[in-house]
Image (cartoon, rainbow, N blue to C red; front, side):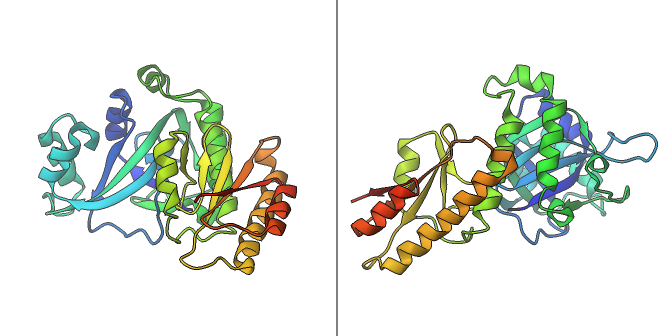
Length: 305
C-alpha cells in the first residue's frame, strides 16, 4: 500500500467540501510527475495551498480520498462524465483552472484523472511537521508519505481523529460516521499487515464476485484483491482455488501465512481487543487433518462446491 500527499488548490477542495462531494475526479496534467506505485485503495491526502502556518509557510493536509482508478480524459470528457465532481461549478471555470496550472497556459489534449472515493475533510489542517516530517515549502507536486516510515499514514489518521470531521461535511453527508478516522485507521493497519504475507498483485479469486454481490458489508482489503474484509465484524476471507487437485503443501502455506498474520494482528497496539475472524474458502474438499488444524487455530474452513 502507498499514501501520497498531493499539493492541491484550496479553492477546489473547498468547492468539493461545501458541495458534499463524496467521490471526486482529482485531475492533474498528463505531463506531471508519474506515480511509481499507487494502487486501488491507497490514500491521496490533500496538501492544500492557502493553509500555511504564518511563521514557516507550511502547507496543511485538509482531507483525503481513496484511489479507485485512473484514466486519460479530454476537458470535454471530464465535464461530460463528472461535471461538478471536477471541483468547479462550470465547464468554463474548470477550463480556466486547467489553463492556470499549465506552463503554456492552454488546456492540454488530455488530463490524468484519478477517481477518488470515500473523500473526507478535516475540521482543521493537519501539518506534517506535527508528526516529525519536514518537506520543502516549495513542493508543487506530491510526496510518498511511506518514505518517511510505515507509520506516517497512521499518525496522520490519528491527528485527523483529534481535529475531527469538517462540521459542514458532517451535516451534509448522513452516511458519515464520527469514528470514520478510527475505522480507516483500523482498515489501514490490517491492510499493512496482510500485505507483509500476501502478494497484492495476485489475481482476484473468482468466488469473491459472488460474495460481494450477496453481502454489502464485504469489500476488498485496501491495496489488493486477495482478501475480503467484513466492515462490521472484521472477518477476513481468503480463498483456495485450483484448476487441479489442491496439494497439501499449498494448503499448509496458506494456513501458515494466515497464522503468522493472526499473531501480528493480535499483538498490534492499534488492534488490541478487535475480534478479528478468519475464513478460508476452498473449491475442493480438504483432508480432515487440515480442517481440524484450522479449527484449533480459530480458522473456519468452508467448501464452496
